[in-house]
Length: 250
Image (cartoon, rainbow, N blue to C red; front, side):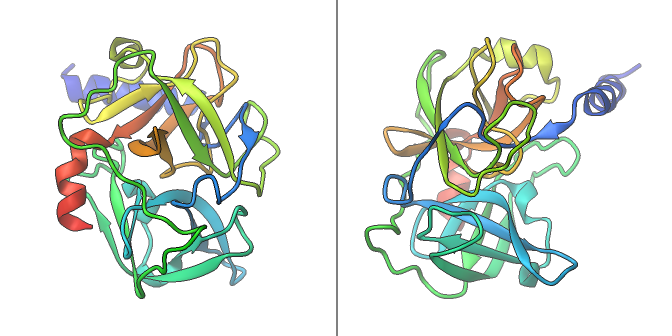
């Protein structure tokens, strides 16, 4: 059996056994004034309303950095909310002019899970709307570095009890070999983070949201299994690995 077949068997087994989730667990409430670069992505639902499904980061006056898998929509079916601490109210809602997925994005493997939401009209910067810097291509994030995950979502392990309030949680980065054991599709473009004892981390609803170090974006929430479970840190897209592409397209 070749490596691709082995990966597919493992991936199907894992996704069947462990429901995929992307929400902040074990963190605390925060506000947009603390993280004014935070953005909520809103997708169209059949009942005619737009609801928050992903997060993102304002990186200049026209672009939000997010996960490529958050952009699997027609441009008219995705909007962004900025300048609000709340996922589905307040602030400003912006329409998309262009949704840009990394050319190597894998819809099934989530490789190169990076994308850009371009807005129709430029953001007006103020106290609650700021651009966050991203780390450059030579940035190295050692294991056991304390980073902050930000987003909207559940306050409980297991993905229950979704919060409208923006939340944050501090977590350590983890040596690559630990995540390589759990995620056979991990690549050099991934950063692994989350306490091995569990109880804290990114899960459903935070997909696309930033992982920051000293307010610079080092990761983009990509995926995790069994929210907050021990020995299952989450995978983030490693911004340093993609920084040239991000700068060139933003």
